[in-house]
Length: 370
Image (cartoon, rainbow, N blue to C red):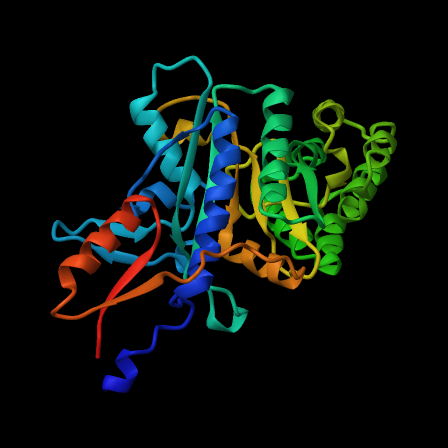
């Protein structure tokens, strides 16, 4: 029994020593960049009411939540995702605010993944939420902040893939696809199960142009020419406007000077149903999982009684550490503390010495002589 107690459950782990120092260094480096964009810190509870992350709000599936009950019988969950929590908080405390709201957070999230997936069930996330601005500049600046934050950690080889939920929704709406079938089709395309996607599209649509555009959604990826070529073929205003928004964001990113990190992927369709417009993910070479997730969610705050457009992203710090390790990029760590020994005869002298050095900011470990 004692041996079992020293081990952690599947999906969580202890972090200590130099690894913890590296993690803290990266968190600090990212936060310094975020602050230069005018963001202020926010801290939300580790657990919330179940309804904050319900299916209606469009966040993590119920089966993947850590659920428990309080003494009053209310169902609570460990937060799987920061964005709904920050949206709830903003709806409560900034309901009358009309100026742009910029909030940043740092903390852990908890998702009860299957142990077979090999993913951590508790990870550290740093993110930002930019509210009360529905402009293309807000989208572009958020993506640019993401790029600058990753660059500040020392990461060089990474790519931001940008998609557009409105493009896909426009195609589905134009083809008369119901919301239920849209969600099913989104799931097939996201998981790259094109056989099932094609079968569903064939069963729902007769129009050849709409059918082809939907079937080819997962194939439209690459540089900005993808957007230009698609505009000439799209057969509905909603999808066309979504593509024009992508072009506008790209032109702004060129002004920032970071367009080389950007590509487009119209087959990127987030599992989070609250995303409404532009979405993006960051990938690093040598890392199989997504490093950053972000996008626009203009209707999420309505679920909490407040209407504000918003865009944001989250960096998974644990995955960032793996990406840097895979790229053989060294993250600085502090040196070992100086060890000062003492005994009964020299304790006063040694204490004066140690206190002086600590006031100078030096790390000193005071140890009794053996």
